[in-house]
Length: 363
Image (tube, rainbow, N blue to C red; front, side, top):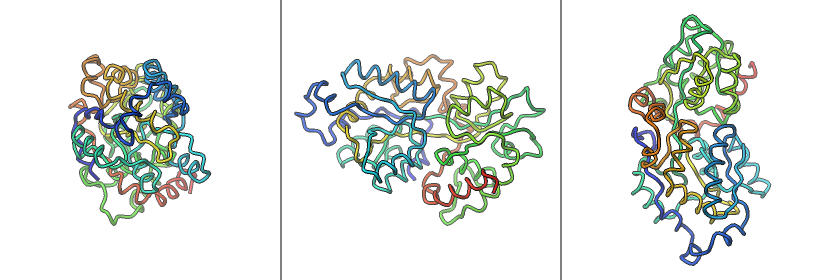
């Protein structure tokens, strides 16, 4: 619940003391060759441009430390982590850019490593208590915004409410079609069906209202995307006239020449980073997290490539103004975004997933 009050600022970098969690002074003094001998560090990412940007970070980390890193195009973190846990074959170390509701759910299942008291205190001192949980810290920030190809329709919606008004704004739509993205859909539907932006759900509220909202827009939805890259492809190839998509990806489509209207009305999404409870290379994972916190210029390269926010405040010193103006927490952009209620989503996840998948399948 803490993150619902997140401020429109770049989050502070990870405290260097994070590397101390579970590591003795002797372990910290070990050279990078010894760390690499524990195995290749594996980061689960989202694929496409996101994963490529993370591979750029990983390459710099490897050059500095000698620790090899593999960045996977994993997509849905929850189902894969559950499967690995059930089979006893955990092969990932870090979950990169994980959705908040997914992190909450996985932690409830006991599948994420929790910070010890000293590390939690250090992180809260660096981030502020509202931006830290027992098991993760914020990494990337972006907007899930309303987009529309102005060459394809007579009028473009510029708000969430207008996007879901298919009579006033006809056209083919693009929406999330995979549980990994349902947090976006749940919260957008809350706004579209009448919730106040600062109080999306009552704790006791059921799924029925938002399910009806999804049924109403389903006949106009031609693309139910299941990956980040599919968002770009649908707009570039004209499979959809309008959609709700990640802001960085929207600008990438615009830069490709599509006459895309991008309305900063939507959801402020904060991706988080966690270490798996049974990660085979926890020491290397901590080294990577600490290295990242100490390299604002490397973070700036990642932010520039994706046009997403990054945690280190000094990264702004390396980001050009024209890129900064495309970031979700740029003041004029942030003003139109609302915060997601990821706890309500997580507490109702099973019903949401089954209901939404049934609607998407035509039920």
